[in-house]
Length: 358
Image 1 (spheres, rainbow, N blue to C red):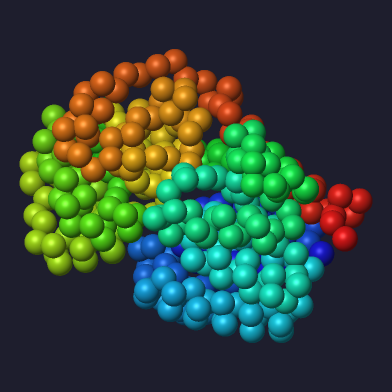
Image 2: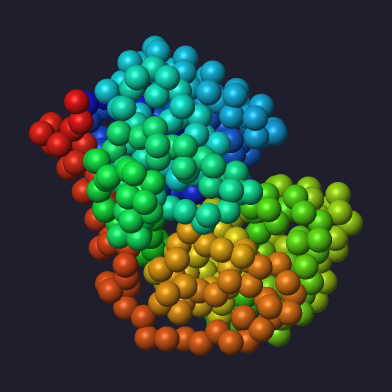
């Protein structure tokens, strides 16, 4: 089977690493990087650290308004698909690259495989929600991370070729965590001590593009009782300057970090505060309490287990949620997102001709 994989953003590079490793011994993979994340700190370093093969195509689309960016990706991906004529197109998650890859494939009548199918926040104001819903309804194979995700798809009438395979990011974490644990020097560079700091990430448009929300988040971070380390996403850095927001308190701003350094910082943090779905899960797998800087999450199982709490952008809620954090006995082998062998299951399903839709 010839598979074209479309990626474009940091979380997708992380997810692609274990699946490419499992896929390539049995199938031909053509890797397409849309260029959605294009600077070294958000792109190149991830390919290097995760041993992801260099992209066969780098489309260089870059940033831009959602419509313009997605349109440019759609056109460029379509050209690649017409040239390569793959048997399937593989997309991950919920970014504009996901949407462009799924749309381009569907318009050329090529089957789509969607990894992380069935996630729903039920917030249509989020661009990511639109992207994941459309991708699911265009997909031939839907690889859901949990039983909850499968039920979300069934509620929308999608039941054929849905496979609950677990979370590909658990594969990535188990693959790379041993190397991340050797990078304790990142704590010295900040500098912070293990369990004596919080780690924060803020990047979603609902937070960064709203001055009041962004100010509320940074007010809450600045009021916490321990230093807050925040590797700053380029979009967030730009918006802070535009809105005239100046981080205060013990907030320590860093440049974007590679995956291994981020894992090392997460594993040693007293608590993680984030609006990232991937970081929520990584905190859960690492046994680190998490506070989500949103009003909802698509990873509802992390809330149900008590490991995650929603705080939105309200400073008081943020401070209270962190104060109420409590370490609980947590065994990653009992988590609800599989056993870290999601990549193998996906490759087996794609390889089984009898299970491949006509």
